[in-house]
Length: 426
Image (cartoon, rainbow, N blue to C red; front, side, top):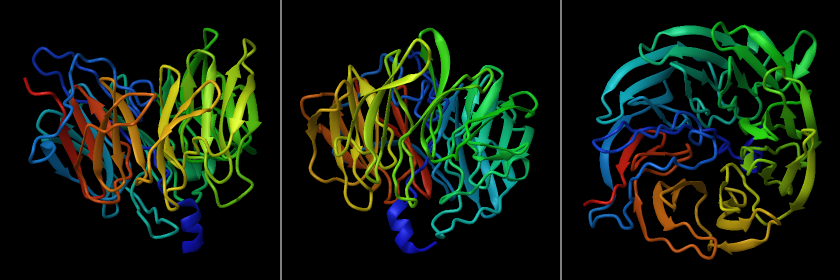
């Protein structure tokens, strides 16, 4: 592989982690325990906190900082802890920090030999997932670990390269683990028992293989859990395209091709659920975006597919009141922040060119973090984008997904994790 291919794909394909801040006096705790928040939709739970509309004269207020190693995995937060996954030399590391002060509490380490094909970054790409006292990690080298949330002691681990022949792909493994009941799912991409599969489920207590599903390869989007017609369904955006499956059995419900004809391409933005019966997917490389309605038979019917409306390179869009917000375009070619109507894909507004990044919604505001390390806050509106404040919070190469909880914004670059206080002073 070469630098030309790197420019084609660019490793901004990263599943990141989100952080939670502990309850402060008079504030109910709203955790962010996995990638893109409680429901993997980029939206903060209502927490009663009013966010500021402008930064102080001396810039964003930093609550604390913590030094990190390599990686694109953002932090997650649960039960008063911030959990962040990164790499220090040849050790992958999960650190637990006090969410109020950033003080380290424990660290879990394991050996990693991952080498990026482009020499770009050797750290983990996917965020940890916290559920029921367990933390699940999936590293770029293909190791899946289960760690006790309170003590940091390992409960079990699997090398999925050895277990299922997981393929490295262009930029390592990047599927954020998804917990559904008694199993944990990863889009590992590999082969087991003579069967090629994109998705593997393991018993969360033991690590034993529960099922494998979908004759496809993994890509860089992470699976999400939806409820369609009162039935749980896992939605995946795999190498070939859309896939729906039963989380209890792994039975394939529906697949449809939705990918580029260009081999040097990726599907990186995770699926977005629209209400209780529709799914939105988006990709670059001449793929475009589309919406599928999920039928009572748990099949999918295409509603619309359009190019050049909201073609997402790596940032997953967020949806609110029937509108989708995200970055459009290839990271290396220049991007715009856009809003489209979910029902038909019609564009509502777009910004001039701005650096690529990611978007969250909290307190009816868009929290936009660019890869240049700038945080931009704007009122949530499908009519126009009018930033109310902006400030530098990190260095360049900020590519991990940020997190929000209880008025605090958590973000990282390749050197440090930063907690920003966004609460409106009273």
